[in-house]
Length: 179
Image 1 (cartoon, helix red, strand yellow):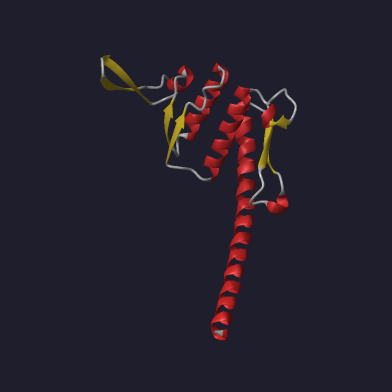
Image 2 (cartoon, helix red, strand yellow):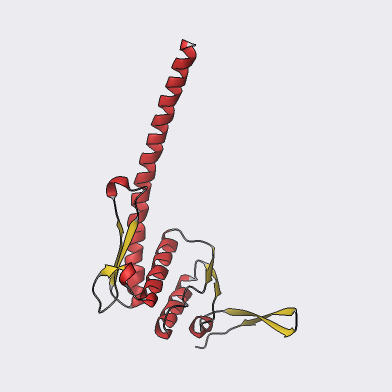
């Protein structure tokens, strides 16, 4: 029994050390990735907004794996403030900038965006659509939208129509970009 107890205690100590090593590794990797995302976020925010600055702030550096984050943004011509104090359109555009900052760090081959630009005004919809076109070189996007500016930037448009009651029909249209 003493031998088994000693074996269990040794195993528990090994497990605790392993958990500690994994936790330290997670903290290090999280800090590294957050740094890259933060840099990408600042660049993407400036590009989408046509200026300004934005950053992600980790709320508690000593408890990095369990704390929250805060997003500060300064659209052109405004003061630096928490994302919560921005208008609805500015918040949506800031969230779009953060999404693309993450995608820059870890590109996906395929991405579905469901009306993420719905709260934007027409000028920012066009900025978003132009940015999306540039970003689409490495990622294929399926964009669900009702916004004209976004549809105009698409290569192909799909729609559903119901010519007869209860019978849906898929329509597709390839678009050529005017030179």
